[in-house]
Image (cartoon, rainbow, N blue to C red; front, top):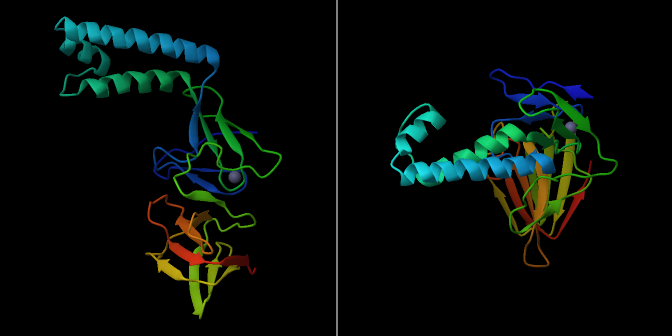
Length: 233
Ligand SMILES: [Zn+2]
């Protein structure tokens, strides 16, 4: 199927699975650019030529007039930023945006550069994070969870057992149980919605589990060091 992205102030796109894909963070961990080989060659040519012309203008004392033509304005800017803008402009003109929905794995591919129409592709198996660049220590997302847009309703601790109660948008509760818990770090979870629970490397026998927030802030919602985890409901 194909779809239009929504514009306006609410910058999001509603995936077929119901997940709201936001566009308020750049670079977004699930966004990418797609370029065919022929366009890549064209981009290579255009960029090399434009950089060459810029360098010639600098050498020959015509930098201001080059800037005026490229930016329609002259302002203080470093050479590295000019070259970066040459890259960005050409790649933006020739590539198509791609986004993978992190909830269902659907790929949304822009039909043509600059056009607001997207085609969807659904993977046959469970496949997520194709465009992500995982940070160091990241082991993976745990299978069997669907906590998207849930909030942390309650954290119950009894000795070395911690139960996290999550309330989903439809009012249903999910519960995750951690046993052999060594540490629980809770951050500001007010009004914050969950994206995923992921596992990170830790000194054995402990495992480290992190709930992160759907607003893509770098601070997690909950960070638990435990021996085992189990989805209760
Ligand atoms: Zn989806």
